[in-house]
Amino acid sequence: MPEKSRAKRSSAGPHEGAGSTVDHLLRTVPPRHLDLARELLGEISRGKPPVGGLLPPELEICASTGLSRYAVRQAVQTLCELGVVERRAGIGTRVISRQPVARYTQVMDTLNDLTRYAQDTLFLPEFRRTISVDDAPEELRAASDLRNWYHVHGLRYGSDKAEGPIALVDIYLDAAFADAPALQTTTNQPVHMLVEQHYNIRFTRVDQVIQGTLIEGAAAARLDVPPASPGLRIIRSYFAGNRLVEMTVGLHPAARFSYSMSFELTRSGA
Amino acid sequence: MPEKSRAKRSSAGPHEGAGSTVDHLLRTVPPRHLDLARELLGEISRGKPPVGGLLPPELEICASTGLSRYAVRQAVQTLCELGVVERRAGIGTRVISRQPVARYTQVMDTLNDLTRYAQDTLFLPEFRRTISVDDAPEELRAASDLRNWYHVHGLRYGSDKAEGPIALVDIYLDAAFADAPALQTTTNQPVHMLVEQHYNIRFTRVDQVIQGTLIEGAAAARLDVPPASPGLRIIRSYFAGNRLVEMTVGLHPAARFSYSMSFELTRSGA
DNA sequence: GAGTGGTCTAGACCACGAA
DNA sequence: TCGTGGTCTAGACCACTCG
Image (tube, each protein chain N blue to C red):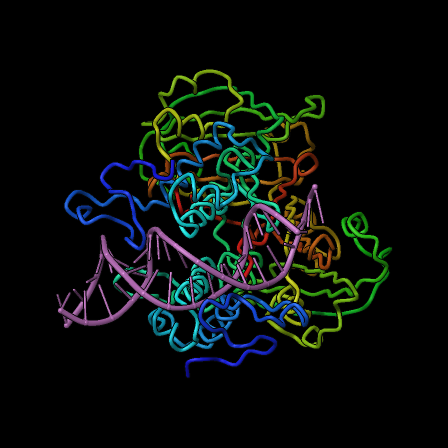
């Protein structure tokens, strides 16, 4: 069947444009490509075609829907952006998920958010040294088999230093990436950015784990909180390719620090 | 000048397609729309047009580059996806950033991540009731002036129930969105998805705050941990438009729950 | 060689926003 | 009313993959 019936919109002829002459009298209808996207999405969610299977070729969808290839491609692109299908020239359009993925995106910016609290805060290093992996925290030992790590330890303060430190920070850096000159001086640049710039590498993945914890003993004293105070432990792992290059561990008193983030609906709507 | 010179590719005439007859003998050249996107990106990064300013109209870019509107729109769409410009029908294409933003994207999935622990976990509601805002937590009172909220309280268990609950959960729902039938039954669907489906709305923003906390008294007993145990308190606020529609508060024992996430370098590179 | 998605053109009507 | 971006058509050549 070359033409689907469509409420509130007459069927389209050659060069007729998006809507008929009566559209504006009734109600705006969604664009045809979104209708098609929804229809395809519905079918995929019901397993037709299944994950791993191919959508019909674009020209076939054109024929079955009566739409031009442009409109069909827009619909397929929507599914692509939703992470539901994947297009390959010469192969076809493959279903990779039955449900949309990545509907929300964390509002993030290299400078502000991965190290969001680095804005208006001050990191004061206390010592730097090269250590053996045996002296590193278990998270690091578990994630890498490198022997030598460069360790920077310090305190981070918020904008009002009188309120006390907001974190006890340990930075572990793959020793091969530890001879950047800037690492030797106090800086308010996040270490991972210095490393990226000096070695001209890109971190392709950052993992982050947030744990609740008690702040005890020496750490409590350093952070100026009573022993057994609640806190957050945040471990970040920076990967370049599949190689773990940097790990940071922050211990934050709950009274002075909370971790907040915001997610927005991914643009492109659909 | 209606035509830009282009190394390795002859100028295009009507209906000539993407490349000349000699392209395949030399080397594949990037598509014209990517060239244009790069060019525009470079100009924007040099402040032309400045942030807040408008790009030339599409037809003007067509004229100055000799490309069709389709190719120009592809280029502008690329800038759009990079978060550099914003298109508004009737207005134009506005520059919103000199540099691509959102270099990293949280790997996220409606089903898995915003409620990531909802996978393989079970939420057991204990009671539901309508409350006055005065009985709601301070975060809710501070964020909304609505009077009535629908409150669901329960426990969430991990895949191994014998290990004890992984969260004490309170869900507060704008009473106007609380009469979806599915809310009255036990379900493993996250509440925010039920609300979206039943009322056909989309949450456009989700804010999340993570705090370290101590688990005391009755909560400790319910979660089966000793008093003064460390934990995480996670508050999520779901907005549809600018209206706060749902807030959830989870209290997680540190021994059984940590919050982990992964960020990946945004695809599309450019 | 045949078929797929990727790119591109020329031309058209529409909804929206501002003057 | 006019110009913007949004949608759409018909037709074309290309690069890629596979048999």
